[in-house]
Image (cartoon, rainbow, N blue to C red; front, side):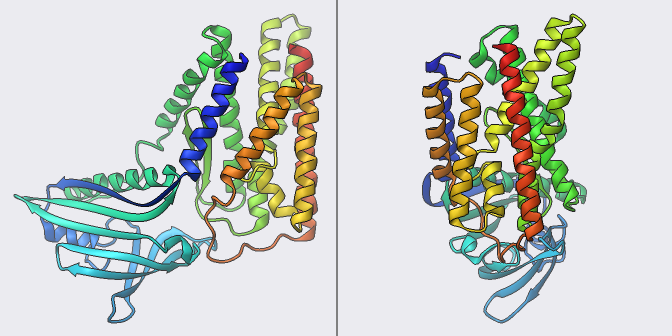
Length: 416
């Protein structure tokens, strides 16, 4: 890629990350509405947490009045970090039987109360002939549009599922967005979006497909780690151009779990890189030059992508691991400096120009500043990491870094 294309790609990604995760939006209200072919009273019994059909979606397990001021305790089917249902204390107001209610969340057993400080939601039901218009409204303070967009589509999905339930009496789990076929489609779309950046030819398409495959393998490693840590389910969401996100089935329980899941993205691919190097060498020895080049390219892309994810950026895997295993700010700063310096040194040995590496270092620093503090604070502190686990994760981090560093140097020697 030319320098101009590289700058445009990097600047575009930085701007998009800022818009999605950090841009201060202030108080915003999200609203979704749908006309459903059902009587208003039936829908009220489903949407009112104390209604006879409040468990229509299996989300609410039970609701209990706490006092006469509208406070209630709601048990949800979502798993907490201990595997038990999340309990939420809520306050209801502006209740008009069969028509409207508003709710604030005071606290729950999963998230810090500050997360709910500005959150309000309202449900309204209005008759339209023999049907009912259901309107959901949520107000909160947002940083970045990602969570705002998520809530909007979550409300639309709930309304669609409510419509199906009203017609069939059955709740259908899942949705089109996270369906495997949809995610494969997003992966293909991502490859085609990347194609022009590598050249509109077969070689460019192959590079775009390889990079997309590398992202998928990386997220597969995170998913495997979630399952190994006891999550009952794990899934991958592909985001065209930006990459993918692996999600577990419950909140993190310990600092070791955070570090292990973060490292396994690159760790899973670290098992594949030596195999790809050996396969490329065998193919080259047998005279299959094209296959050897493709395998070497895959090994190089996997190494470059994964070692880049190990840089000490706040939301990157390397930053996540270091924050869990470093005992204090001084150790964290020293380890971050060492890891970033090692990455830049490997990049220099691989043939990248010093000016490019300086720009890369600046970009990583900007990314760390953009994403710093963007996480959600849990209700209770995570379980501390034991000294042995701290040393084990540090050793694993160095081993994974070394494998990908070698893979990057080997691939550059074969292809450049």
